[in-house]
Length: 226
Ligand code: GDP
Ligand code: MG
Image (cartoon, rainbow, N blue to C red):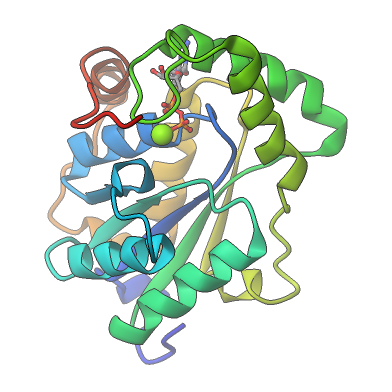
């Protein structure tokens, strides 16, 4: 990351990078942050190109950084090679970009609880998703896709590449409510990057409740594939 600007003075070029599996609440959190702060958000699930998807995703994030101080890179980023690709490709065009991990901690010992939480959410989501439509796809097929992500998940390791490039790591819990995780993220961001919030009236508890409520109940994906 760019050493020229001190962390406390950073006010733009921040990429929020979820490290997650399906149903953790990535999109819900991203929508709530967009609602509260007007930040940018790009969902990999909205990418319709077949070739060069990772590059297209990174380019979309870079492009949104020109008009938004913070952009959420909404895909699972559950493997190191994905994190490496995103960080490298965005940094090439946005040289002062900083990356913040939203690390949905997946301890192998906690997998049963994570499965329970994410399966319930995904099955309850039904068809309200671009690619994984629990109402139409067979349940077994969906659970299998979810298991694949859990199996391939590589925890964040700040001692080694590529995860040593994160400016900040925010650990969150896939088994608790998105409301709780939202609060953790906002307070860590505020603590670490106070200049980012200069002139912004910080949201209160009711504002956070309302943002999560909106994200969970009023959001519909723009597109559907399959
Ligand atoms: P993603 O796959 O990580 O993007 O997960 P989503 O954000 O789409 O969340 C999966 C489903 O769970 C959606 O239908 C959300 O509305 C729902 N959801 C997200 N957070 C919560 C929560 O805290 N409680 C409950 N009950 N449902 C949630
Ligand atoms: Mg999503």
